[in-house]
Length: 250
Image 1 (cartoon, rainbow, N blue to C red):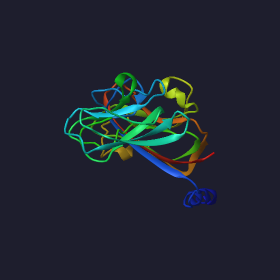
Image 2: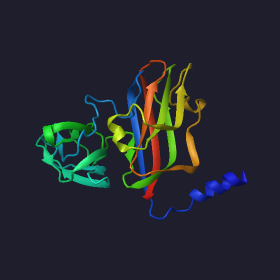
Image 3: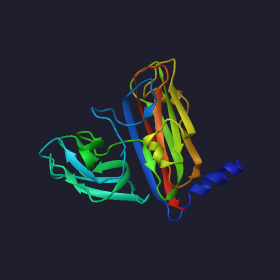
Image 4: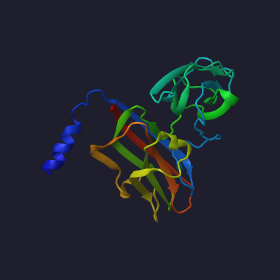
């Protein structure tokens, strides 16, 4: 116990130069094929297949007061942010050449669906659903920094007698976001449900969420952290996950 307390105490002190990050993702259609945790919507998340500029857009002409902040990895392998002011249904081009897009956030609610697309061919990348402010995709690219994971939790909402298996994955090569079937390590796993009625009221009877007194890491620079889920018994399930951590220079 003395060792445990000492480890927990270490994380109570600030880490010089650290930049924290956090995401929360929900999916109400988790099935029997494992998939990256993200909101269920009419369109599919698709990562940039090649380095390119991006553009911001909406499906409602009145969405002209919103701006989208995009973050991810630029064509130099460094973390980058870019803000694009929307102009309704008219696509607005950005100026940063991107390698991978991590997530997007809006500064105000919209009437329609907002999204970013690849400038070449207007190829869809990811969206923010109407009424939401974030894209809510369970992924983090660490670029030129190394990462530590400090908190991972997952659960089920709605009622089901089936189960969901959540996997916290580490891909050492961020290019694996384009070919995610192999080349990864499972850092942790959370299973909820399984054989009895499980909803938000009975979640605490399922296996406890993972909360770390010491961070997982360091995870080397140039990688991709993501959460994947599968309805183990082939059931269409509703699940959520929360992950947080911090990055520091190599």
